[in-house]
Amino acid sequence: MKLRPEWFGALVELEWPRALVSVNRALARRLGVQETPRWSGADPGHLSAPTEVHVVLSKRCSAGCSGCYVDATPKGPALSLEEAKAVLDRLARLGVFHVALGGGEAMDLDYLFEVASHARSVGLVPNLTTSGLGLTRAQAERCRIFGQINVSVDGVGEAYRRARGFDGFRAASQALELLRAVKQEVGINCVVSRSSFDGLDAVARLAKRLRLNEVELLRFKPSGRGRARFEDEDLTEAQAKAIFPLAKRLMLLHRVRVKLDCSFAPMVFWHRPSLAVARFFGVVGCEGGNLLASVMPDGALVGCSFGGPKEASAFDEAATRRAFDSGFEAFRGYAARASEPCHGCEYLSLCKGGCRVVAEAKGDWWQPDPGCPRVREHRRAQEARPAPAP
Amino acid sequence: MTDPDSRPRVLGVRFGVNPNSSSLGVDVTFLLFGGAAALAASLALSALLRARAALLGPVATHGAEPGAEEEKTP
Image (cartoon, rainbow over all chains, first blue to last red):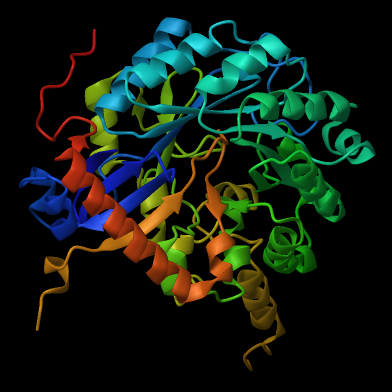
């Protein structure tokens, strides 16, 4: 167990149950925090550092997925081993708890396990996303070092090929079995698009059959090679409204934990769940520059691996600290600038206007997420209003 | 009236860790169970944290305190 003082009290990391707990100052004092500079002054409105950082180790991958978010190629750029270690050292000193390692295909990097081992040695929990293609039994055995590992499976059987552009389902499924044989914290990442939506039940059934611990549903995003396909693969309004009830149904039916990625927050909040419960359990939308940040293969520190300006070089600890203290305006500044219907939405403080990357792809970084059902309804109502008389 | 911050309290929790290196995974499981789940989790975690602290002593701080000397960039 370890903790990090924050303005409100502290964040406490538990290993069992695996959790990050926010406690107030009174409880933080009971846990041993004496007065800290973080308890002075006004509420900064953000954490002192992200709780997790996505380290995009490379944009190197030979799978050639047709919607790859980072436009990975077999010879794409990558952090060197020494650079990756240096970034992890700095993130640990700045109080980050978890890192999500990915790419590209991180498993293709011959130093992946050395990076993971180094993360552990400096007090970070390394987690991994992989395609699972070509995973060997020996590699799976070494994957014990990770916290959670998710394998990308965007559909079962033929649906996988349709989503990714090649037939890799059998290999991904075998990887899941190999990983599950050595550890419990294995799950599926599934990108949800207009064409893959109807196959989600089969994915959840696969997770149940392989006794996986979670299915994470990720909204299709206009990034990398996905940008060209976005207009055709963005969810319809009916699908956007149905994703949260569907996630609940899959959870109850298959008894598997279902997570939705941050960009689905507007689709969750449209159903008006309890605000207090959502806040307590950390159901949030865009947390770029607050709960999370990303480090790209060139060392750039950004709020989100899909977009947003470079805030600092992650090799520069002082600059990274300054960014955590007072940067990320492109993400943190949204709520103050939100227009309708976000401005009047009771969930704005959690949702943060949905996905900035989708908003930008649709014309303006600062507009409300156009995929939000509430935004769609608002715009329809605006259009239906009779024009003022001349 | 008692200052609410003077009572030791759990303010929130995020279970699990996020493996996805492109976006934040949000666990919507607990929205199924509503306020009762939040209350139960709050009480259980508060008791767990206090018990561990009582048993093992002060919890180690993660990361450097503000103002601590930073490594100079080469």
